[in-house]
View 1 (spheres, rainbow, N blue to C red):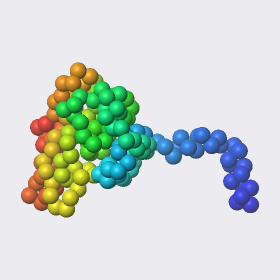
View 2: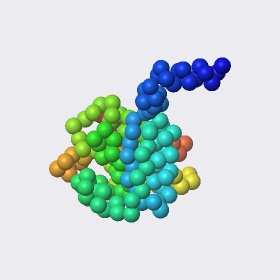
View 3: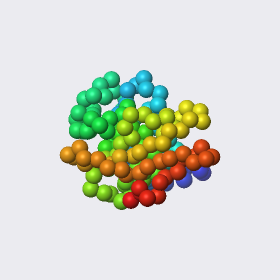
View 4: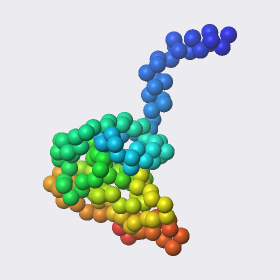
Length: 163
């Protein structure tokens, strides 16, 4: 009887509706070197924060960065695209969510280089303070968010720098 009900349900409810219902999470395309382990960790951070990740390994990250016109000063290891924005490096998921909510007139966010302790760059107890930059098409950049480490070795956002 259950099989018959399921079959009737699937005939009445289109399959693409079911797939759309499952993918209410924002889709992010992540271009990364196939050998980079920190990229895998950052992808896991995104998945834990309800992002639908399309993992796109490539051996030519330089061409990806050139294609999206990423300012050289903003470069890091992986490049992601979400809702028309570029996300470069180990940007925390909360900052991406805020970006998608606020929809500022910028090109993207970046955590240049690879600061220890950022999502995907965890290395034991060490945590470096870091900045999430916002940048525009002309390459101008400014602070989007700033993180420092408190006495309990936890990241805290510096309130006076958030928008």
